[in-house]
Length: 370
Image 1 (cartoon, rainbow, N blue to C red):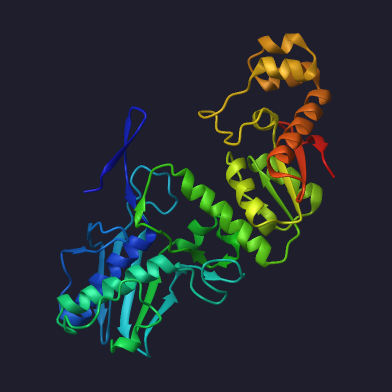
Image 2: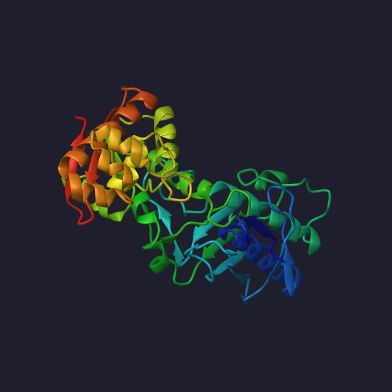
């Protein structure tokens, strides 16, 4: 059973990462390959010691190979891969432990990600989980003795401890279409989805997962040699900023509400120039010192906005849009300049920051900075 976590007054179910589902599929397939029968359910060990069980949604086998599939349950998280079938095919082949991208799993084409270009987009932690699951399956099936050391986290040294060469192919039917709804194309992951997860558990509406994706976008941009990146609050401002500067897709960071998460990482791993784009409401929060721009975690102070503009009537308004309709471009310019001042005060001037304010129709309303 998937445990629940409480958020406010609502119990939200946790789910399982793609990596956990692939790991369960690998173990089930190996139990068939090495033991002669698929299990009704398969239990795996997650990095923090949890031992969840998974039902199989797919079984198949042939001469020298077996494959199993698990339907991903992301709990109450709005994960694009919720309900996807995660399939693993295993066969003894070669030397050591190797991974292949089947249909619907992407291939890395740009540097800066946790696995190098040319490799299937199966991250290091899921690979380590699969190595441990293979070791567990070998013990349970009697394929090798308990004297074989625990291979938790071991992938490169699989052959060094006398284990058979093993090829693991992970597939996600329909994954190529799903990947178009993710950040994979921008990160240079072509052909499908990534097999991800550091704990095996999906926590609903995870801010940490979004921020981690921003970090990977920065890593890819730096590894690609880009000297100008942009983080925007939404699709409308992103389109405007990208068109304004002619930036490639992999220069566009999916900042969303997490201005602080993006800028803190850029302070550690800088790029020469950073543009921050957004609608006037979000940028007003940034101008007032908020680094998380979500409506549930920060609000516009209209008294402060009125003071910034020298217009007392704004203090009684309900929305920034209402204020903008009253004040026009001077409000947008003041907000952009105040947002830039906040960024520079917090993160310095070693990076050339600029701010682009965008109206509801997607037009550039104001710019501040170089």
